[in-house]
Amino acid sequence: MTALADGLLSHALSASSRRDMRTIDGGRPHLLYQSVIALARGQRIEEHDNPGEATVLVLRGRVRVTAGDDTTDVSTGQLVIVPGVRHSVTALEDAVLLLTIAKRTTPTSADRVNPDLADSYHRQRQRGHRRWPVNAPLP
View 1 (cartoon, rainbow, N blue to C red):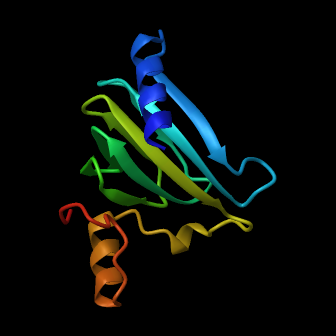
View 2 (tube, helix red, strand yellow):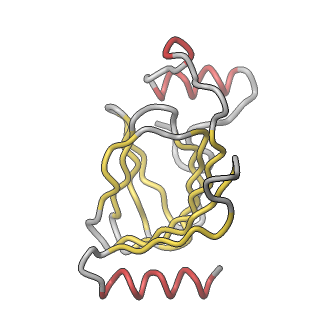
């Protein structure tokens, strides 16, 4: 994983897109898949929806995850559970991420998604679940 992260980041820094990505497991026929994504500082993964439940583990650098009005900065070694709302990721430094997605087999109804991440986090924590973010400061 270290060699892959180093190689992707090196390529991203010299590429015109300033990014690189490699799927390391899964893909279309699988429910679970993982990709390593390298982003040069300042690059952004534009706002998008989740195809399922997702986590991001920062392997190198630091990124900002923005979901609605909520943001959290995530550094090397930290894991964040990506909220089930539209979100974006911005590289605050040259960064490499391990993105893990478990695709949904059935759609989630809008009334089950809480766009207020802080409220959702506190309700989950009261129930003994620690969801957003896993090991970053509280929103």
